[in-house]
Every structure is written in structure tokens, then in C-alpha cells.
Image (tube, helix red, strand yellow):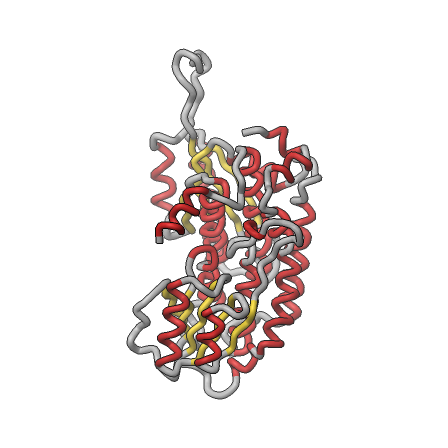
Length: 388
């Protein structure tokens, strides 16, 4: 890793020919523009008439997190159950009483497109989010559903390669949140979305390429993650969703394999790795890197933490969750596992998620650039697409 490169704004720009950093920096603008597009497309009509019996979300790849966020906000006690599908078959019980939400930036992803088409044939309500004039938009029009057009975020004159479902995540998510609000599934109104956009703007400002690496939290995190085997662990529901996104961004953008989990479910699996082959432990001061060979990558625990519990508003379960997270961190430190921690600022769950996602997204891109990798293009991913 060339950590000095991260203090050179021109070198960073040269290492990001696809403009992924700039695309990520548009996240706040994506939220504001998507609020307008959702209203213009008539997303509020989703709430007209009888409440649907269920909501099925079809999304995959970089847009898969849309379904995760909706399920998080709806919760176990939601008045409408939420299910997730990546591809056919469409469950047999889906019919005119149900709502199907299909999300694809290109509007051509096979799974969401096929599910939307089948839902339309069965007479289900349909909400689609994707490129205008795409096959997904056509399917939605035939089913008389609501389609929200999404434009890929990229700079004029630059290659749109950096525009992907990873960098356009908020454009894809906001219309679905608007539909959830119209259905009474989640308290996500325009005012809240405005605050989410503001938080994304603040993160983009703190992570700007011209910021010195020692005061740029995303660059600091990138340096810490370099050369490690990251285990991304969320300490709750919101941070669990963010952990999955972070692991995906590290793998897809920085080509760094990472696993993810959330507490309390994955506590045992995570702490079991602390005495495994990737635990650093004490370094041998007599080791010769030329004779003994370079040391291998070591485990790093990246903990995504929710705001500290407040005795005035939080129950005992919140304090127990925080104590468990502290215990996991303590066990890691006892055996020499390096730990990085990112704590969400207080606010609505979507605001917390926005800050965590932005921080880890920028860190993954800076890590890729410092490793000499184009964060927007992977030749092996391109080969995989060509083979389909």
C-alpha cells in the first residue's frame, strides 16, 4: 500500500479514472433528486386504496441492500410483511393483493426484471426503480405500475464506468422508502430524507480527496485496513446492515475479501476466529523478512457501533447489546487482534446508516487507490459478465 499517495489529490484523481469518489460524493444530491423524482412519478399512489397484503422486494448485486434497509425499517412488527427474492420463481402466493418492488439501476438485471414481469402477469401492484426507457420500465408500464427513473451519477466528460448500483445506491433506495412511508410501514418523510442528505454531504466533505490523511476519517480507516483480513461486525440491526454493505464494498471495490456479521447472532463465529491462523498476536522481533519470507495478512476487526445507549430513552436490551460489543472488542484486543471502530452519530436509523455507509464506502475506494487498483473496474467482473 502506498499510504503517501493518499495525501496527493492529483495522484488520487489519476488512480480513480472512473470517478468513483466523485460519484460517491453525490450521495446527498442523489437523495434530494430522488425525492423529487419519486413525487413526480407518483410513488405516493402506492398508498392509495387498500393496504397490500405483503411486499416483495426484488434486488440483487449492488442494489441488494435496498431490500435489507426496507426489512430493517419495517421490523418484525410491521403491519405488512416484507420478503426478498433475487430471481425466479415468484412465490405462488403473490397476486393482486400484493406489492412487488423491483430495483435495477440498468433496468436489465435478469432477476428483478423476470420477477416484475411475472408479477405484472399475475396482476400484482408493481413499483420499479431503474433506468428510464429500460426493459424494466416497459414491464412496469404494461402492468400500469409506478416506475421511478434513475440517472447514473457521473460527471460530464468522464467515463460512466464509475456509475454503478454501488455508487447510485441512494437513488435506488429513496423511492422505496417513499413507498414505505406511503404505506405506513416506515416513518421516513421528506424532512427526514433532507437530514439524511445533509449527513451524506458532511461525510463527503470530511472524506474529500484534498483532506490530509491524518484528519480524513475515511483515509485513516483505509490505512488501517490495508494488508488485513477484515471481519466487519455490526453491534445491532442498523450496523448489521451497514456491515454487510462494508464487506461488499471492500470485496468489490478494493478486492479485499471480507466477512461480515452482526451481534448477538454472530458473536460466536467472530470470536472463534481470534485464535485462528490469521490472528497476529505478538510479532517475532528476530524474524527476517528476507530469509523467513513476508508475514501474511492478519485479522482486523472492524466494528460498526450504534450510538451509546441513553438511560433516559433506551431499555435494558440496548445496554446489554453495548456490553456484548465491548466484550467482543476486549477479547480481540487481549489476543492481539487489531480493532478499528466506527460509531454512528445519533439520529433516525436511516441517518445512522447513511453516516456508516458513507464512511466505509469512501474508505474502500481509498484503499483500492492506494493499492494501485481502479475502484470502478475489475477485469474479472467484466469477464464474468461477458461469459453470461
